[in-house]
Length: 586
Image 1: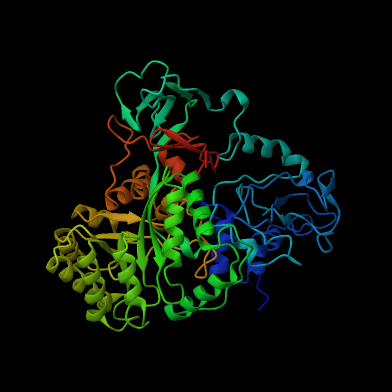
Image 2 (image 1 turned 90 degrees about the vertical axis):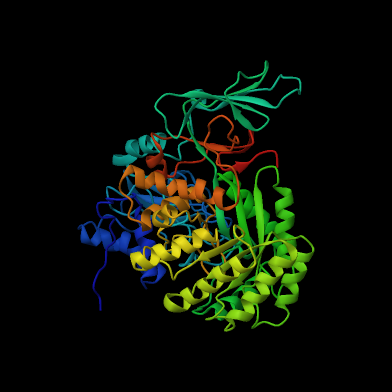
């Protein structure tokens, strides 16, 4: 109808999000990708009366542009727009002089105008591979939510050049000056003990730095052995590494050329798209899974529960591929594998035999299930199969339950009954559990008590405010709740990044966190909740704790949850496994 639209960030009373997040929400609400981008560029410029000077990367307009690497493989940091290669942007006096965007000569990066909002300091988008004939409108949006808060933009405008340099120097993605870089001295203990002293760290953002002494992978209060390795952390915040309690690494297209997704609205339609994507991707599943899992480590994940599709369409290729990735990353990452019957246990002949084989051979840690009533249309038969396999082979259970309201409660009650009947207490998890949010308090309390008695744990991926689990209330009753990434750049969604700190940020966002303790609780859900769910010791950085932590710049834990600073170092069992977002020694 010709009504102009403009995007804004409001007051950001809760967790601060960049204008890119608003663009993503505009797209999710039904705007095309290009129209969504226009709400923060040309539309916003027109609303502010700047449409004759800003909002378009064209000759004569303000030289405020974002140049983003368009190579496949996940979003990367924006680079100075006046320093790129082919099709270099030229500017004079803060104005663009050429070439116009309408005819870029094989333009290497993606060029977008910066939103004309003084408060919009971050706006990162991910482009399609430059090998393609043109820019994909949908691909421009793929990285906006996935890397919210991790990259600073640079302006070519002369008036704002100094401000941009200052923001880059102080921002979470800033590269430290040489004198401020974390430094290391070698271990000279002669091999009698694996010992490292991490000097000048601030656990959980403490005001005064302390030294963490690690011997044989454990934090100790004892003096370090003579000749121990010393790492000067220069006042960085130390936080426990996190646990991804629910992720699908076998499905991912992370690091692959851009994938254009087809419409789908039911589980059956999504599974058809899964199979198409599986056959379309050229990189073997095990390499894709290892690439994503390694990225998760570099962002601060120490363990994950990986749901892997098992169906006649794939046989056990996913289980074998993720198993291979688990072995390759065993020095840095603990992995539980769930044989997940995405295509249904009963409705897809041959699945039952594959689940049985995966459990019998010891290739998996848990057997899964999915929506026994709505999707498989066989509540008792599915649960009999799944729990029977678990009972026979001594594996755990993790069932996807998307069913809502009374249907979901019927399935959940049946799961509780079978858990108790087979004495599988402590070995059963139910994922998503969309029937639980919104329950009346009394009903929720009764259910939580029954779940706690059966020692059944739950997981959430914080998809929205109306579907996120009531974690605090469940924990009051003793129900363990883990947080997970779910799918990452697969046929179900172009979003996701396997970054559990970012997932904690999203949890805070959907719960409308505002207070420091609420932001801290979101982090604890991603770190401690997942650890308890997987039976791992909590990495609380105290003596006796596993030396599993990450180092970031920041003032305090709540600020880290909001700003998502770059992970400068990741430590697993006292060994440095990643620096600046990249694995080391792998």
